[in-house]
Each structure stands twice: as C-alpha cells, then as structure tokens.
Length: 247
Image (tube, rainbow, N blue to C red; front, side):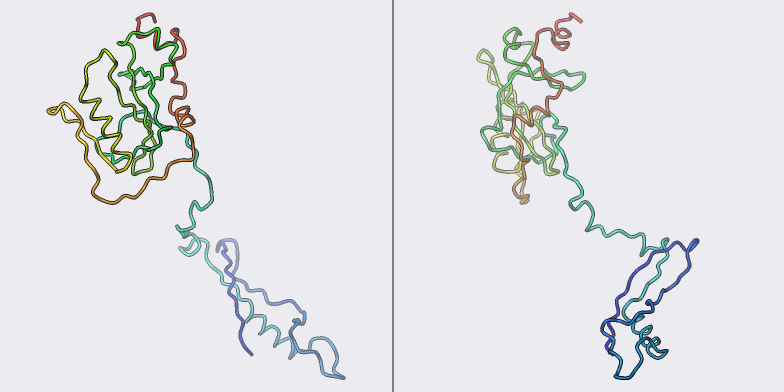
C-alpha cells in the first residue's frame, strides 16, 4: 500500500496540554474495497486495524512546544506584505542636507515661486499669500522657488531656493542653489556650502542609484501637507504681528 502521509503541526502549551494523537473515526474510508458477496457489512477487527494504520499514514500530528524556536520564529519575507499602505502626512520644508544625495522632480508643475517667511529661532517656514505680501516690505519676507525633492532614503521634502528681487544684487548662494536644483532633475547630487567660495559646491553621485519613485500626488497636494498650519493669509497673523513687535 502506497503511503500518502501528511504532517499536521499542532502547537501546544506543555504546561496545560498533553501530547496526544487522535486516530481516525470508526468509519470505512470511501476508497476501501467493498465487502465480497455474502460477507457481512461493517468493520471487522482486521479491517479496523488496517483502517487505523492507513489513517495514521494519511494524517500525523506533530506536537511542538509553543516555547520553542520553531513555534516562535517569524518568516521575515512575509512581513508587511499588503498589511498597510503608508500615508504621506509630513513633508519638511528645507534645503537638502550636506550629506544627502537628492533628486528634484523634473516636472514644470512641480515647482512654484512664492513668498516665504522663515523664523530662525523655531526653524519654521511660512508661506505668505500674495495679497498679504503686497502689504509687506522686502525685509519682512523673501521670494523663493519651491522644488519637490526626494532623498535616497525615499524622504520627500520641499526645497525653497531663494531668488533675488529686481532691486537686489545677484547672489552666488542663490544662483548656485538654483543650478544644483536644475542638475538634480536628471542626476543624484549632493550640495554643500563652501564659505571660502561664497557659494554651494555641487557633487554628482558616481554610483548608479537608479531613478526615484515619486508619489502619485500633485504638487498642490504635497504643498498642502508641507505648509499645514503655516500659511499667512492676513496681515493680522501672529507671525506678522511678532515681526513688527506688535505682540
């Protein structure tokens, strides 16, 4: 008789359970030969022994202590597969770190020139609505082009690159930062300030890091997350009042 054995694992607590194998019920398997003519139906002792042996071959229970490595070990390849979808809830507004290789989204609809106010003490950046900017002096806010960036660690950020106003003089810091953002649209770059040079130095990655994977969100959706609770829509805003010494 060909064995068709399958092993069933049963994890038990050795403190509250005993190792026990339950045999097949007292029934005739569907594939067992029918009785010969004149032979009584039912299960003889010989048939019963054969059935029990056959059932033991078909199904065997393996008892494993629940406090054993086999019972507790988790297959890491099965972790987080389809468990949840990550939501984008935080997008920092900052320039890339000097040790970070980044890419910039190449789409023209993923850059925008806006007015900003940066609070040095708290390192928070506020977006100024155009109607409010008209009431402010050039010393109270600055113009910047916002770019969407992503690091090798897949962290999204909004990079504000300052631009000079019409009355301002060309600034090598602003120009070199804009050059870095433009280059990062096609290659991975790293940017670091060189105080002696008076500008940013740009380094291009030698290793092949591949193309970045961008989220399926519009730039406006990302900006809404990045500037959550940090939009100045009135001259009475606490930030404006604080800058003018009124609060």
